[in-house]
Length: 315
Image 1 (cartoon, rainbow, N blue to C red):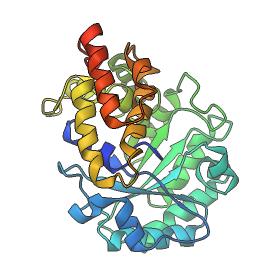
Image 2: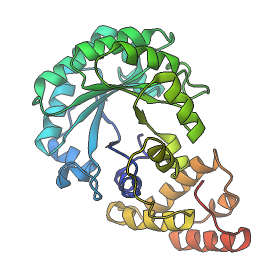
Image 3: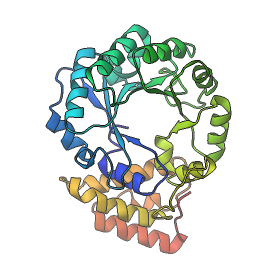
Image 4: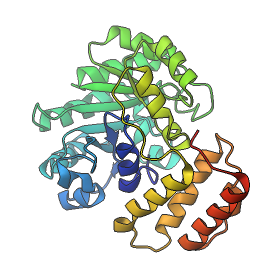
């Protein structure tokens, strides 16, 4: 997620355990293909065998409509250590769609095949290429042709968000079509969309029959969710590094330090994160930290609020 799942956030989520892999913020490929060194600067995990500091693999995600440029971008990413490439055909942002990227490609299934095929052909066979899709632009049934085109192009797996572009992020997500696609394709299908709770996960699993799931906003709103799901799936998941928001925010501040050229960077990122979390869960003290101007003020306000309201456990 652009502007959200940056390197510090990926490091934090990965070190807490439960994730099999994570995905970079997308690189938008329009006029110019980013230099290899630019990709490496934005994804520091590439210097660590394409893994987070705790060892979780990371995919590099590209977005755009030019097959040749996307293939060249993927080649450059692999040249600096990328171990997997993901192609974003699902972003619903109007600015992205107006510039021939993201979900706008869902209107042109043949172009999805062309792009996936070009990227696949440009890379060694050992480098997986995956595609992120929505159910369609407007029609839910479009997922069948689009998924077929991605598979024909050589996608190693596809991730499907259970809504169309026009549905945006408005509940509910429609998981049944994901299950229909999974039942037809020979490649793995990853289910995504509106998995906010363990019960949501169970219903998504029942509807899709999938063994693979992707979390986005929900992983940030409830950092304990991935552990609940991992246990449900019988995965080995280490105990989370922290179980309360204060400890988690302290750790995030430490992880942000190497990337915080702007002194306001860390503070803004934490406020952004808490806004996302409080939209889904009751965090009584969030309003008391929104106006703080420095990190010191922020943590002082959090401590003061918690001393009144009690501990702030992660949901």
